[in-house]
Image (cartoon, rainbow, N blue to C red; front, side, top):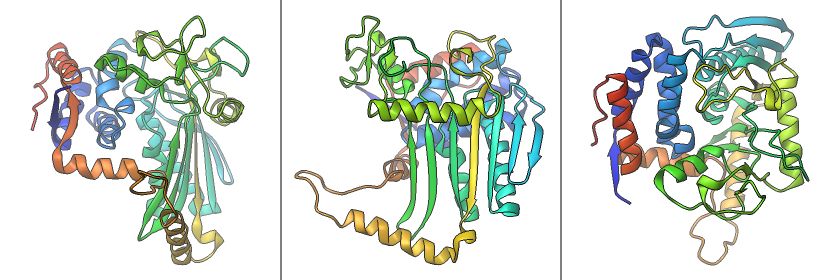
Length: 350
């Protein structure tokens, strides 16, 4: 498969121009573009420009997403708050929610913010990691369009419902766990379909409940760890949607092929101030000790290095900044179609 590369700056320019072309104010266009570019930069095409740029633009143009929301703090009580996103872009609403969670954590030691009336927000780590700059642990989750059946069931009733916890570290860096509660994110299946690749057996099943490696035939995704992933998805549905009064399960609006439909998703953001537990520097040293303990252990045959959560994505971002962000020719063709459709300067390869 032929690969082209694009600089981070060029991809950001391109995405922002597309959003401005469909009526998104420049400030919000920059926020949403940065969200998608960071996903792509960190090797998460499932949450990046390659999968989401065109559908985001369609939803802005079709009225499914409010490009200029009036985000409202509905309730604020001690270390908790509730936000109404006014059907705004998830990247914009999510950032406002995490900013508020950090503010509440400064006041109370921890801050927790429920969000309703929002839309797809990209990769969860982009919000959770915001807390680390303030010597805080960040927490983030959202509900999504249903892709998973309850254990023993066949109907898609729960989303991939991701969970992210971002923990500051010392010299060895942070630990950032960002995971779907299904075997994979739906976006990875969709990207594989565009690129004509098979997917691993066990990710999903077709309409007849048969395991498949054909991404075009995947009807529903399987929970990670069986009953454990199913149970975790329920808990995250509660925190993201039941708590905030957002849409639950199959009440959530579709995102693809539904440009006029509001999703009314719920998110849940948290920040925990490390200083409430003692000296932050000492905590960072203990984090270094934990990471070293894991990395210095014996490895399986053929394994060159033990990594911690967040490290593969961080390394991908470093490499892509140096070499350019890789796109398959198929994905690059999609980007050129987007440029023509929305009347912006085509994406230039490096």
